[in-house]
Amino acid sequence: MMKKDILIVDDEVAIREVVSAILEDEGYDARQAANSDEALQEMAKRPPALVLLDIWLEGSLLDGVQILEIAR
Image (cartoon, rainbow, N blue to C red; front, top):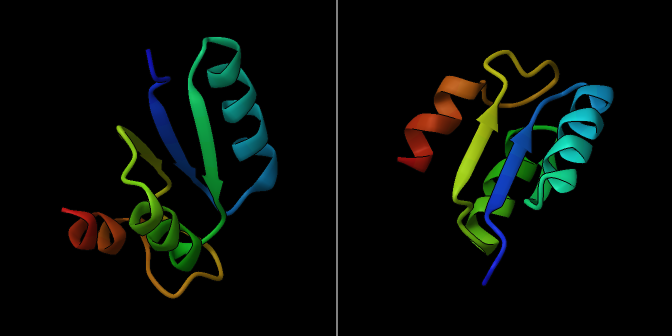
């Protein structure tokens, strides 16, 4: 059975790393993105089963709400 794929989008590396480690310990395939460009690239490569999305992405072209609108 394939692992469930979760994309973690957050501008803070420590948050991405902690959440990713917890999810991987629980058997999920966790991918990370630091900004809107990385998030959209990851979603285009392979649509995730779930996205954990920070609303305020510092230093990003788009915020989390705008990414959500595009991803829908």
